[in-house]
Length: 153
Ligand SMILES: [Zn+2]
Image 1: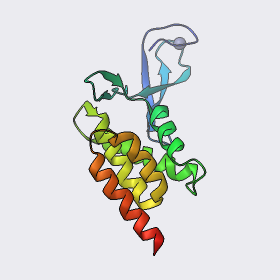
Image 2: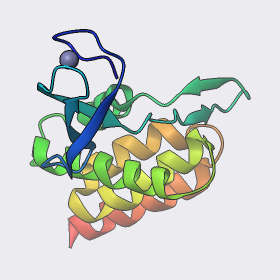
Image 3: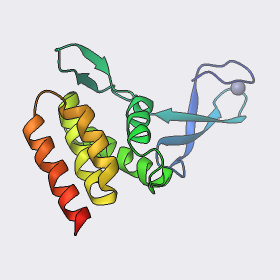
Image 4: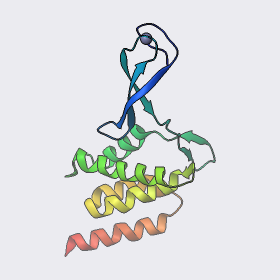
């Protein structure tokens, strides 16, 4: 790491600690030539997660896209932005903990549905109808029927 003052190539690390969020390591360095101190940050390079779509096409996982999908399902429903972000955070945690670098869009959809189901049924059905369209119409209709039955009691 070059010294920003004198451009000397070598420095020694005098202090090293994680940043508050734990996302990076902050290092205090001292130039071996001029003795001045400077700070560097070391970050882990994030490995992109690949989403395999229904048609087999692959796409880099996109947080905003997933967020928007859920927001759309929760439109005019009592689901806070905070709850929606929690769902996405949990899914991302699961993704980064798993050793797989690929996940199908179906698996992501199932994870969202499992969470939405416990938060708001209408949002859940809206989301499910997008994800399960054509493929699993029967289970979707069963689900819808169950909710309608409950509502009429
Ligand atoms: Zn220097």
